[in-house]
Amino acid sequence: MSDRTGGPTGSAGAAGADAGPRTAVLAAASHRSPGAEQPRSPYRAMSDAERSALWRQRLHEAEAGLTRYLVSRGNGLHLTDWFVLQSELFADLPEPDAPAPEWQRVFFRDQALMERFLVRRYGEEGLGDWARSNAEVHREVEPDHGRGAADPIHRIARQAELYGSEYEFDDEEPPGAEHAALTITHCAIWDYREKARRSGVQLTLASPCTYCTEALSANIRAKGYRPAHRLTNGPTGHGCRWESSAAAGPAANDEPGES
View 1 (cartoon, rainbow, N blue to C red):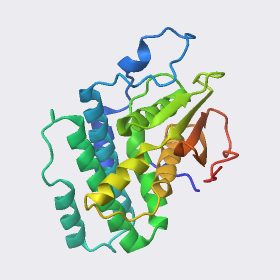
View 2 (view 1 turned 60 degrees about the vertical axis):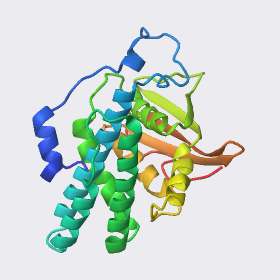
View 3 (view 1 turned 180 degrees about the vertical axis):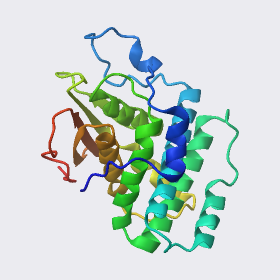
């Protein structure tokens, strides 16, 4: 996969211009002193408001990234189709203080709509370009929590928590500034997709991993770290392992595999 480091344009640039680089501390991850034992699943206590905010941020990253990607392709887009999609994306949005499941519903619906829009026009290969464009937005809007290579891994943990996935940090090597790793032992995105499919949501991809691995890898790179991942499928269901490293150079294992 190629890496793109150009500055954001379009709606992504607007997001970055307002905020600029930020530093923030998450309550769930800040109550322990440096070097203290790292809880295996520290985000179980995320509040409903924190969950809603992350769903909204993820929706912004995806929509602004898609706008950025379409602009980069030039004038070959039928604008009427794009306007119709946007009207669908922002239809019946919940109130800002709505419970997190309401924002989860909208995010999943909109993710499915954007995937279908892209794949119909550019094929599945367009998903990788979209993921890298989203990552440029992510770089601007995701705060710096001051944990180095652990920051992207903590973001993955928070996303896993949104779905109710089972995940854990390594006991032997807690996330650090130079290297961090996370194992998702049961990916609940698969469960949620099947529930959505049964409720009538049209899914474009046979596996969520097709896009998810591209997106998470791009997000880690956008923050300046080296990603590596491995897909798993065992007694606990579909899962994956993610690593983020401060070391320079290409990741040794940054292509989907399965064990």
